[in-house]
Amino acid sequence: MQGTKISKSFHVTGTLAANVNIRFTAEANMTLQQISAVASNDSDATLAAGISSDTDSILVAAVIGDSNTPVTKTQTNWATTNTTGAIAKGDIVVLTLDYDGASGTAAADVTIDLTFTEG
Image (cartoon, rainbow, N blue to C red; front, side, top):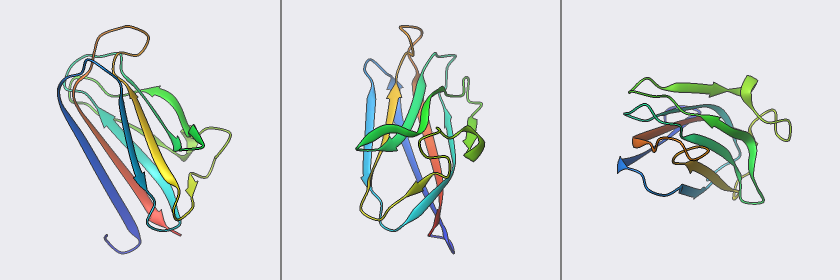
């Protein structure tokens, strides 16, 4: 933790053959500030974010970056069900990576970075 910022990074190596579901418990009341995601190839992968009771309550499935150029999503991109990105302490945060979008090209070597502020 750096001041009031909390960063979490996830990396999945290789060419994906299935969707990826990442879950962790929020250690404090937090607000998601941004999500940055990228694949090393030109893929059709999408990423959704939310909590366990509504897995796309913060970010409805959106394309990730391609060819090592990340796409960053911020509060202006958040879903109408949680426009602030607020997450309560103890909530299970869920990231759902659809490895090939709508049956397109599978993603390879995906990196996802999350930035939160505490409170």
